Length: 299
Image (cartoon, rainbow, N blue to C red; front, side, top):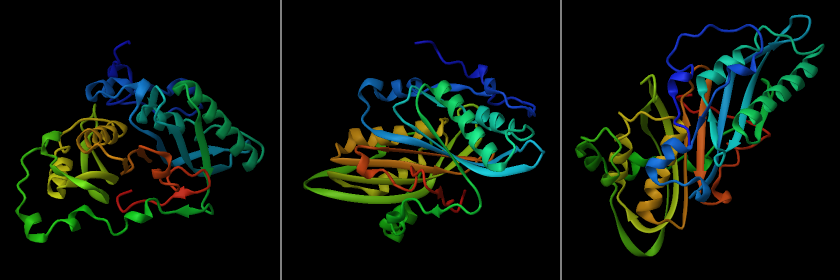
């Protein structure tokens, strides 16, 4: 497998915005590079899932120069060999801004969706759903079952305030639990997830969602310490979610497991990876083709 060279991408570089559509602006990244470090084999993935991208700054012109502003939702499976590099996608989408695509709004919408779908399918060598929404489109909240499942509320206040945080690079040894004789079901979310871009070192903030059924009695304090240990990690969003999934998978030997994150938007795009042991655990709204996803407080 050829070594991925991040220097060949547009990440961390000053790039001018093109004013004409150009498919060559897109760049892909192989998933396997990071997975190798966590014993995640492409031929035997311990999860299924999707990467969901919401692109809020997308516009194009009709043939008479009328600007049309829309929101795009991109969905593709986690078993694809590649993911799309975010800055290249931003520049690629910006290239539509001053180009014309049809006599009517409906015609132009149809054409840009087809173009983007074909380009991303070819780039990533997988099926990419490209959905387009306007201001009147249905908006739904993802992960509604997690509304009252804040991780910090599962730890007594005095204990929470006495925790000493000293690990700021991913430290799986922090995770603690005890094996019981019964299946324990947990569902929690946390807004403490923070890592950094692998190239620019700029901070990435995410809301993490975890659902797990396991014979282990989980120490929530240790989970909080583990999540905080990502603060100096440099990884892409998809990699962080898979790292957490694999650590929980190895530690808790779960009957069922789901890990997802909804990240703060950067450059008008937010990335929301979700990984699960079975399809029933996937959030229907996040991966739905029929609605936009409501933004979190950070997005």
